[in-house]
Image (tube, rainbow over all chains, first blue to last red; front, top):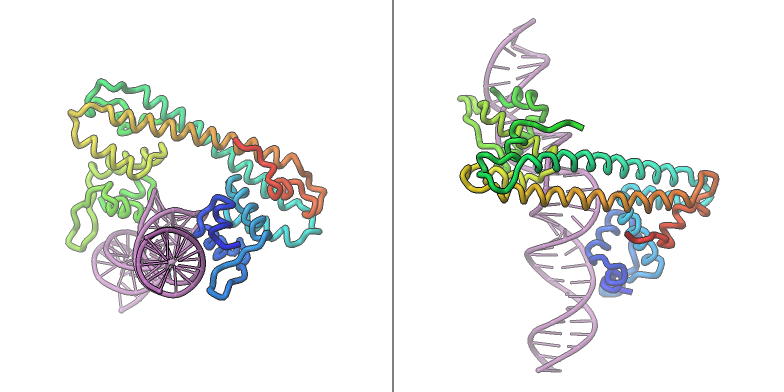
Length: 135
Length: 135
DNA sequence: ATTGACCTTATAGTAGCTTTATAGTTTTAA
DNA sequence: TTAAAACTATAAAGCTACTATAAGGTCAAT
């Protein structure tokens, strides 16, 4: 399978596949005589794993870490679970932060309507004066 | 006021101030004979505005847009409100996406405990097999 | 006179790609 | 058969919003 086919199969760009190879997430495949990369099913599975991790919001470094655990199949999987726990709490704190932000933005927005001039805009005034309740 | 004092006053790094100047968000200040930048109170206010916008999650481009509105004080402020509305819905969709993600991660995590080997790890199996309920 | 704190510019690094440039190869259509 | 279209290759730059590093000039104090 060539790079374009693999890319289409998994819904990524060919450059992204080369990028993962360069980052050490995808093993370098064999080459044809003309230099074209040839991929096996293993590569497809590995790429699918990477993409699912990315969809879960894991960084390339975290994916790399997971892959290193997979290379030692008889170790306890404590570290895998810990990585996921950390990521979950990271996601949760992002949610909390964004919810606080939303509140601030909504209250800022409520301080204006569309019938004013920029000079009297409640939003701009709110930002300029720093009427921003922390937290 | 020199750059270091302005930086300390607003809790940013001196490089950040130069960066904003370079990006056209902060007007170039006058210089002393030795080339040192000299800031006025106006610069302080402008920088404070930028920082508050950043805390609200606005991009530098959006801040630039807001500043351009401020240059026309007698225009209606419809565009300001629209910008904020867009940003609010952006924040809301981020929250929604993260909440869905959290759900996925928690259910993935529930498929394992710490007493297994990597080979039998429910988390890794869940990612590899793609047991990832969309949405 | 020299140390330390401050200032200057320019450049590179961060994350995770995407885009562009340049060039070689293969397939398809005329 | 030839020429265009589609694919592949590498390398380098661009994106966001800074942060960090390098190499150097300026100033106050010791």
